[in-house]
Length: 136
Length: 136
DNA sequence: TCTTTTCTTTAGCTACGCTAAGTATATCGG
DNA sequence: CCGATATACTTAGCGTAGCTAAAGAAAAGA
Image (cartoon, rainbow over all chains, first blue to last red; front, side, top):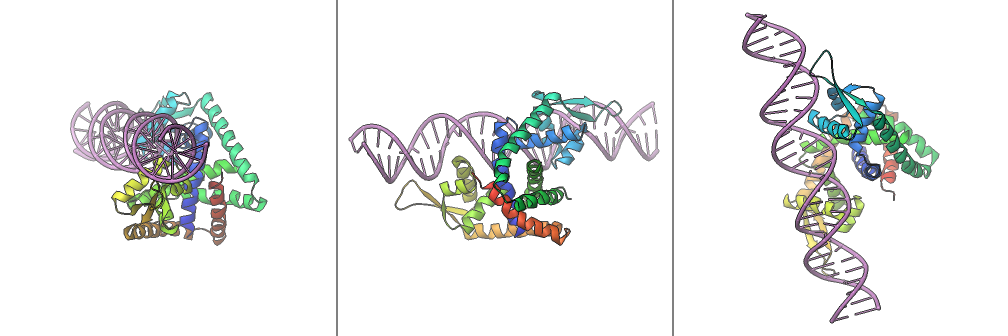
């Protein structure tokens, strides 16, 4: 029942992290999209939606919210007028890093309580889960 | 940056599983609560909310929805009139198993594509993540 | 008895996810 | 060149999940 346990574990982990993210003033979904914008350079709306495995309108709203708060900016493509490029602002990059540090601080406390062996296990498993989540 | 990668991995895995659960006609949050009701015997609302790391009103609504669909039943406690006991119905148990089988089927296909070593890794990591999510 | 505590629900808000439909731009066949 | 189709994104509207604040009902204590 690996599937069950992974599912349940993911749900509970996210609920826990959600609280930390809430304190940082940004939701998990936005944070995840923002990190793509920050680290994968300017991306189009379509690329972002695909990267986040989310329908296009969902990404439109996520970006609209972040644009209102000055975390990202939109630019129309010069060649293709339909395409919108998303770029993280300096503030967006700063917020991302701050939120990440905050998560890191709380999670680090938890991780420190683990066996070094468990920690190595998690590090290795994260990659596998990542691949699992991005399949299909 | 294990925290980041775990966070991102959990988000993407859940988004993927959400689609499967949707096809099964039950959401991830309900499924998770239902499995507690099924496997941890009758539980009170408070216990359920605590087990799922969710505020009480959230659990009230989850249970209300599942009660409407005949997946669980409520009973007042004989001794303490404030307490409500939640019991999974036969239908609820059936639905849970069906949804689990469905998830299992899709995830199994993914898992089969993994190295046996990766699979063992995931099995071991699930327990660690579980503990991580249930902390504090 | 009156107050306080505990368990649950109601009301109301924000946010995320979806589909269906609309708009604007590109592209292709005639 | 022009109409039809295809693509990229947005708008509208719905359902669900999460929260807090406050209310209701029952238990426990002064």
